[in-house]
Amino acid sequence: MQKLKQRLQHKRIFGMGGILAGILAFTGTVYGAPEEMPEENQVAYAEVSTCLNIREGAGMEYPVIARLPKDGYCEVKKEEGAWCYIESEEIEGYVYKSYLETGMNQETYLRRTGREEPVYAYKVENVEMNTAGKGQEIADFALQFVGNPYVWGGTSLTSGADCSGFTQAVYAHFGITTGRSSRDQAARGKEIPVDEAQPGDLLFYASGSYINHVAMYIGGGQVIHASNPKTGICISPSNYRTPCKAVTFLD
Image (cartoon, rainbow, N blue to C red; front, side, top):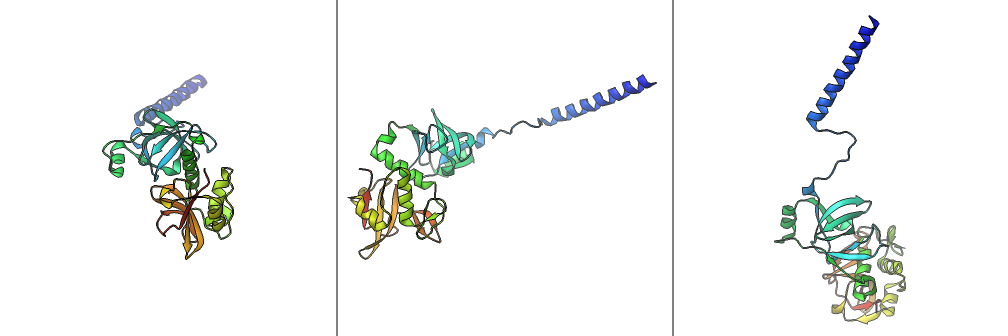
């Protein structure tokens, strides 16, 4: 009698296991497996004014190996914190994900960018040793702080800075000394024609003859600056006021 009960219990357990297995097979659900992003939603593009640096690793300390131009097409393969590992045609590497517009297919990409066909990343060589490349590097670094607060007298890229504190701190990251105030920076840099400013150069604005504001040119007729307490660190047209002077610290 006892053996009969054990056999019945054994059959009941196997029967329930078979039912559960059938349900899982029917629904296609595998619990504990990572959910992959559908391929059609992996497409992204560079939402920048000029170009987006592609690095060898997930961090600013890694060298730039290529650039993704404005509206440049790529596929996001994985995310690592604030960085994305992307593939753009034959080029692969890491980009700062805040500058990517993600979650679309190729058709949506073409519609949003207004392009007839995708534009892809291109390789660069010795970008760190090139003056223009260094300026772009500095401008790209500055762009990651858009949206952070304006603080009068501040020099923190994260907690808050005023206009000259912001440019001072950005340049200090690259070991370049600019001076503290906008007037100091205007005097210490090498003056260049305003219309010849390149990414990373500084533009100055004045009330009368008194310089009272500085911004960093990022290309495409735009600057990044710690504007005021309301807007914080933001991007503006370079002619939102008429620049009175431009200097470079990269020659």
